[in-house]
Length: 420
Ligand code: HAM
Image 1 (cartoon, rainbow, N blue to C red):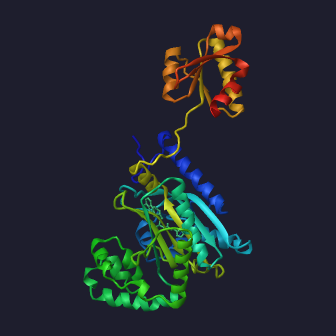
Image 2 (tube, rainbow, N blue to C red; image 1 turned 30 degrees about the vertical axis):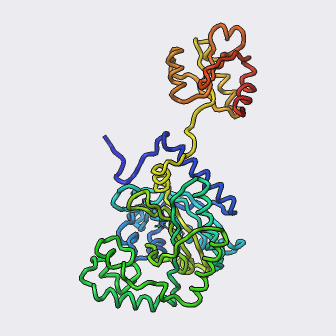
Image 3 (tube, rainbow, N blue to C red; image 1 turned 135 degrees about the horizontal axis):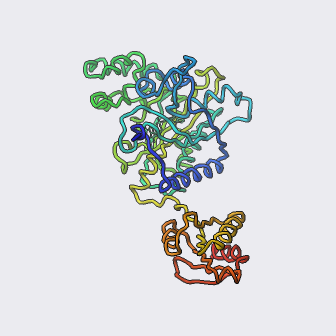
């Protein structure tokens, strides 16, 4: 029997309503912050990610699903959302629209990683990207949006860590210091880190290899090297966060695993979901658009993993939406009655009431069992007597009470009950 590929998951009805709830909340919060949806392709030309995410990152080096298509083009399934959005921004001339351009997406992403709790090969991100502003207020706005989303979902226990990783100018000195530090321990580095030490020493700080992780603890900290401009920006971001009443920890250990970041970086981290504790990560990327061939346009954004968010909500006992259930199940007791039930259900649906009836030729007892399983709030029975009198017997499944209602009054009856 065929099975789903390792690291992927089927989303079944007993889970999908939770996803709809998360997605609806994401869209609602995005709208509050005046952020519009963008949908970019599931795959891009590989260079979008090698240039965007960076060819010394773990994502590009080890984790991408890259293949040649039948036209011999190198194609990659998106490992993240930002680079594709940046590509779309440039290609579609969004620079000419009113700035800042505020975008959000809900998208599958693909990374060839070792699957474990909270880590999949196909996972899903809700992300936002704000393009065209260098103001520290917009960094804070992105963070506040994520925070608002978590609060709306009643998620608790997430800690916000913020840092600044400086700009191209101040990073030069920092790179020197890192190379100096790591050179002394070069023999302990993993092969990939040995290779990238001189090309991009900051990537050693987020290597997942155990030895490299140990070395990263005592490595020089970027905050000791950032220039006045970056420091001022970072201070201002913190002041905006304080203004928003958001708690945060300045954490020099947050460097993020993607090359496009400049200045502000942040993560929302949980201690309740095991090793993969980062639910949301983001930051500023002031050179990405130019690196992809566009104008000199700044950007800031974040993405959060929906699977990790759900894991956190489940582990901390937070209610995640309502399972779908029809308001009424209509149970016909004979052939003639089936037509009436069919018609009644259609007319209820037309008026916006979720209704269900028999399509399995079940007897009345089995129909009640089924109605119970699908959690219908009411069951309406149509037998020969009801058919002759143009009525339906409606049972409230929770209260156990029963009422006889005229067939042409079912909608009104349910409308009132629904709002009770
Ligand atoms: P990232 O930190 O690579 O950043 O991913 C963001 C989030 O996606 C993570 O915090 C995590 O919740 C989720 N995630 C990542 N990999 C996996 C996986 N293998 N399985 C399950 N969940 C995963 C980015 O992707 C950036 N594009 C964020 C960003 C947007 N920065 C600026 N704008």
